[in-house]
Image 1: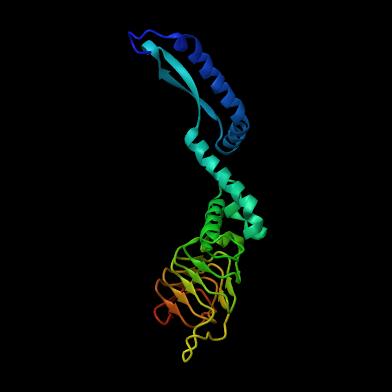
Image 2: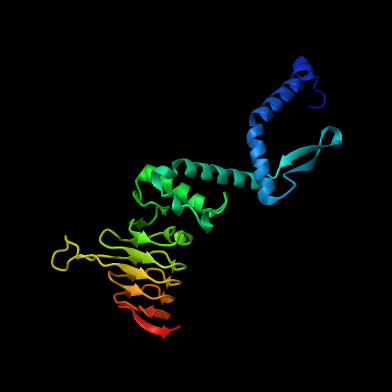
Length: 256
């Protein structure tokens, strides 16, 4: 209260009971959500879920307020909303088997955010429709790709183009694909650019690393532990693997 101000009837007899009633009503209405968040915070981040903080009051008298660990609670709350959003809409966009593995092992796992972002863009902008797993809206991806669910991070980049309308792409477990990489299964006919040539499968072995801006052309097969240098254009296969391929056209420059 401001010094020298005489409290009126409302301030003396109504305001405090009104504040208490509103606070209790809000607490009752939000108690289920608060309870859920408290349990989640306790399980995920440990105790205390609520902490006490001292504040100076009227005349310098100290009083205490009780607060949630709000920063972590809000982060967890957003994760829960994303998880629920994906769980509800998953049947319309994804096959359930793709929402497993290390990227989806908990409510706070990054995969749920990837999926929520993807679903929003599919609804609003029709990106990557028909692909039954989460894909970044900033890349173009076909749906004829075989990969391990733990490698779904390869579909969260930007500028990538995975073309599968004419052939299948196989990505071995543990392979990493950088941004702006193109994997092509069918080229245009040299004499008739309106027509595509017959498609050829592209196979990447396990534990490969495809550098930024590289292009893998139709029919290429790379063995396990093949590294493709940034900006390379791979036109032929290196099925033995355990090598570094670089250049345009790509050639082996080192054995591993």
